[in-house]
Image (cartoon, rainbow, N blue to C red; front, top):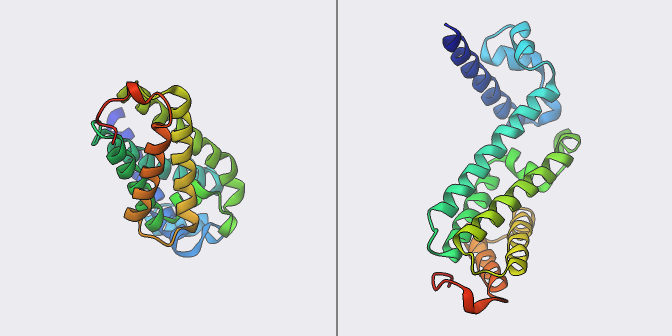
Length: 203
């Protein structure tokens, strides 16, 4: 019975977050109202507040969910090309750019834009997102391509994260073209030192 209740609560939470996402994507976070959110899902305001005690709590949970989905996709892109650094970077960056292009919340998290009253909730979250993405990429390159010089590795990872964010905000190119450009830059930086120790799959 306890497991059933937990499953029901998880499903309710996801329904609430889905409805919140649609509302924020359509009208902006400023116009998100708890009463409207409860009505959209067909639950009482008491039920909504028992799950999310405030609008800010909804925002926190919503952004955390979108960030986790983004990081999962990045990890999958990297894992799909463990034998080719350029292809791995291109896949991960391409996924991120495509997701940010169609998901306003991910775009906001990754760029710290303050439209629709989001800035107060994004400042620390964006920094955490960059730190998590950087740590993930750094650990990935260190494990899969241990021959990359540590200094070059850190520079390459930092370049990948910063260039991806820059392309989200400013690039007029397609996600595919932007991803290729970022991958080219990252590989060049990674090859800048320790070249003799690198695996031949870095090309």
